[in-house]
Length: 115
Length: 115
Image (tube, rainbow over all chains, first blue to last red; front, side, top):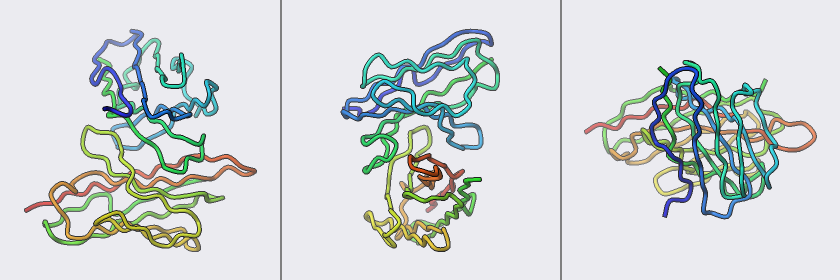
């Protein structure tokens, strides 16, 4: 069973479109995250949700909006996509808020290409 | 400014050989340090997590060390295998005065193990 699953795995879309990436975790973790990995392989945190509350927003443009219908899901919606949004987006989860004892579990990533 | 720097940026070794990856950080206050392995096209997977009081921690052929005084960590891989080929990412948690935690990711070391 996949612990943290993301869909789709690949997404190619045109500039200006609106798209969503879905994430689900079956670990019972209380915190979920979205990370962006750029072409230089640097992972940058975008959002964190704990008990349905946004607790980190690292100056991400407001075109990006996380949506958490419940504790097991954290979806990422992106409006008016730009070329610079092309990257691999990783979902992750952890237990214990922002100070998890056992680390973070990452999904396999969604490669977004904006053309 | 909280930073995590890793060296070398890339490394090629022969199967069966040992290698050591370095991580230097300026994150303060310090909470914990983790090493992740990221296979190509996959999400990062946790190898070790070390707190302030821990100097060495092993996970199979992986041994991590931490010197909190000099703010340095290393990941030693023994008897390397082809499957060790991956990106190794150092992640430091901390850096928020008064409590809470923030993750600072290094840019990773790309390791390739060859026959």
